[in-house]
Length: 583
Image 1: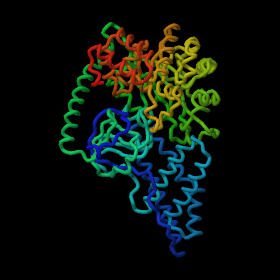
Image 2: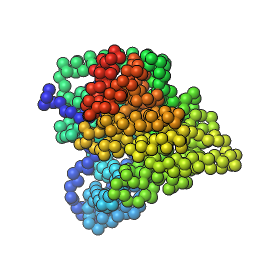
Image 3: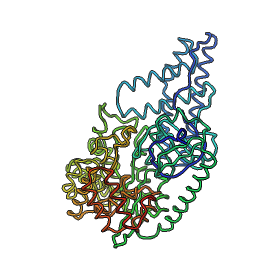
Image 4: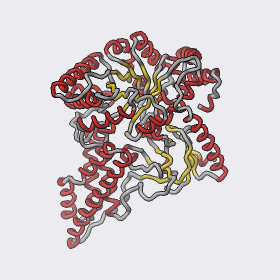
């Protein structure tokens, strides 16, 4: 088994057995071939026909994605369609065919690579999505011209496991969940976007699996364990039987946990913990409701912009926010405002080059510098809040003035809507997402200026430990259980308690049972969790006492290492009668 076992990062728990479907994003080898002058126009016609065929194919993909995950997410294909309509680019390809007598596939590859190199030389992270789209168009058109087929996710059997170098949103929205049972990628960590999405989908996934594409081929049977982070190649019948036994036990455990979704999340000594859901995609609304979410603690809006060629309109946002709010009529829905920046600028957005965009112009900084963009979202939230419980949450806040200016804009837009006679709420609660050490240190000031706090543990860990959360090489250094992170979490909880304002945790940490135990001990009474994890966290809450959690948290704050913290937490849950090995 040792020779067949590969270890990566378990980012979404569960077992999956199936045949690998390797998704290659690289170009096929395109031979350098010239054609006689008499065939030049034939190559031009081949190019035009291929472009039209690929346009139709991507349009079909977009329609299927709209049915599967909604029209907003399906807009991710718009950038590729626009590239296939670029007359200047296509004209340059035709000129190259005519001038150099190249085949259509070679000329298209040459010009596409030339464009890609030009964008890469700029060094802007905001062009990452555009380069990804260009690669996608290039691969599709060239494969079509070479009669190699034009879609890597069609025609595979039920129970397949997708294997790729990197799994991005464009690939994700194409997946038919009735067919795909697991994900494996060379890149990615527990808090990368694809990992968060896989966890929300309840799909077993292993990422950061170095060398996967070199050892795994389409058709290779795989046994993946998303909890342990292992991938077993060509498992034996005995190994499959053992895995199936484990899977049955795990399923029985899930069924048992789901029986308690209607039970209140109350500790054995009477603490009521509010459990909300994190919603990344529209289709996760139903999953959150089915798993007993008491509202939404983090409604991400990135899918409105990631990979799209334009920003959503005010009306589009109103429709979506209203839909989510009405799905939870008795509970709050916390909308995180646009977290633009880094690699999340839409293609059409004019943004400056930045050497380090994740420490630059992003999130609330962009919104306040682009007030018309921000005002449209504020108006949409106010309009949708007329008959729903919507809250507005600001990401990456580091200054009190950012909160104050946002509140002023909310008041101004509410007044403007009233004057226009547009039905809207007179105001909404405005909260702050604590994602940086600066925000944690200023938590007492932020409490005074806002209505609530919510800790994003993914970025807080990243910025505190100076570890890129998407870097698989640094995955062992990325741990929210580091004592430095724990001290900041305690500081935020204390500030909220002193200011009599609610504080929650909406990062991936809240979806982990051991971490949830710790957070309760630190004083957090609201946790926002990935929908599939809600039953398990609810069960955990009902088995532990607040007193034991506090005792463990206080000991953890004095620990020297993250390993010591985990040992303390395991001892703490064991004292509550829970076997730590099942968490």
